[in-house]
Amino acid sequence: MTRLRRLLKGEARRPRMVLGKTPVSLDEKKSGGGEGPDQHEANETPIPDSLDGIEKFLRERLGNESPDVILRRLVIWTSPELDALLFYIEGLTSRDVINMMALRSVMLAERTTALDAGALDRENIATVISTHLVPSGQITVVRSMELAMEHVLTGEGALFVEGSPECVLFEAKGWEHRGIEEPATEKVVRGPREGFAELLRANTALIRRRLRTPDLRLDATIVGVRSKTDVVVAYVEGLTDPDLVDTVKERIDAICVDIMTDSGVLEELIEDHTYSPFPQVQYTERPDRFVAALSEGLVGILVDGSPMALMIPANLSSFFQSPEDYYERFPFGGPLRTLRYIAGVIALIFPALYVAVATFHQEMIPTKLALAIAGSHVPVPFPSLVEALLMEVALELIREAAIRMPDPISQSLGFVGALLLGDAAVSAGLVSPIMVIVVAVTGLSSLIIPHYPTGLAIRLLRFPLLFLSASLGLFGLIAGLIAIALHLGGLTSFGVPYLEPMMKPKELVRDVIWRSPEYTFQRRPEYPSPQDQIRQKAFMRTWIPEVAEKARQDGEALADSRDQSGEEENTRGRG
Image (cartoon, rainbow, N blue to C red; front, side, top):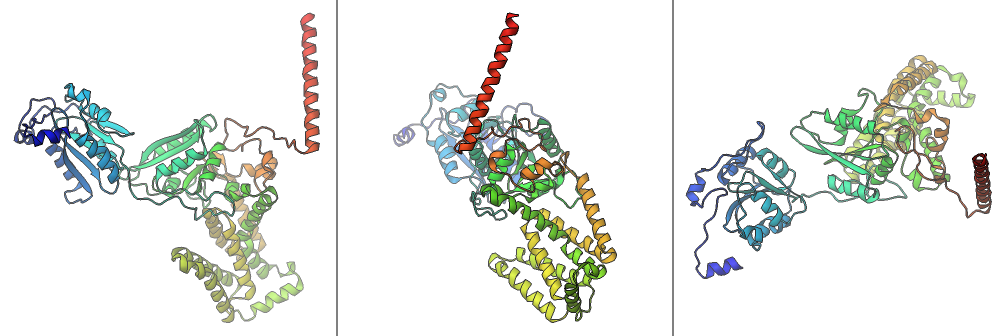
């Protein structure tokens, strides 16, 4: 308002100042004269003295025809006034933040004491602007054009001042993103409905809200030569094994790729055994499961742009666990987990077992069932192996088509397609009704497995077992299973044996193939080697009379033993 009143009164306009020089005319400023920039590293371009040089550099690097690259000339109302250039990417920044934080603050703000005192020069103008004019919670000053462009391409705004060797960067992120929704791949009947999104800061906020400890560490790095994707390594200091954290960071730092599009790409680059069909890294779309993994001593990885968070290390039993195992009461969580293991075995061996028995070992099945199987094969011109392959391939086609089709169509395509195809195949005499039942049960069993890549591994290994069973019968099936077991025994996930929890009988019953009551989880799992083994104190259900009486007796016995030990110490002291 003061400036407006001065202009209305016809007062002479103050000359604009190029930092570090005497006031010059606009034509002289455009000529680009002035002092040279400070010395910079060879791979960094210093900020030019003139705004024309800055704009030319940005246009050449980002393209003259890019409509989303905004270069806005403005005047900072200092004493004397300064020419400035605002640089941001439309769509990555918030218009409200740009208008209120950058334009309004520097163009219409009242003059501060530091500015009126004439404290401006080439070296401190960026500091003065960042501390007096731009009201941003996250602000920094850089001295190279490459760093300025890198920050702006992540959604920040840049403010260049005529003659200054530094650039002021402020937080202005505001791109469109998907909101917090229920995870599509890990649905539960009982439990939270929040899932990770593609925005990294939203994901870290979901983690912070559930794990409110100052020991939570979110170490950030950048992966991708061109994409420069933000990657965060999450862990709990004092709980997670430091060697595991260092190993994860070392493998991420060794990555040198052009772009990092998703956490799945990162998973393949850091896993131990690339050619194994079994996954060696867990992933989840649920913040509650991610936080639970961190509290057990695992290391988490978040990739900007991906709603899937990675958890390291992994083992075979972790892929058969669901968050609902812990949200439901103990009598239901344990049997449901055991059912998944049974379903995994069925999905792996049921077609191969049927082919082996029907082809080589008919004497192992009851007579009536053997006659039924033989009768169903009479109109079929193919052996059992060809039947199984036809139905398995058809099932995989239906499954993949249902995934790729739009949701309204895919919901009915899977069931209707499978029913029509199975009925048509039986009517045409291509397969037997028993084979349709075997393949259908196998397909349903594979869908029960919570972890999709583990289901893919089982679906892939089903075909080699089919050929072994058709060639050698049960001997071939057992040989194939032994080969799979040996392969699993040799797998590791970041140095942790893949089958470690299954090799310990106590762990096997407590939280592997069965889920014990919640109050029995006093110790954390051993496979990630957590520094703090104790998860919770011994939980006494003292509202039950029998438990309360036992707790009282234990307390009295402990007190008596302490008194006795105290008397012995006093006796030794007198002696």
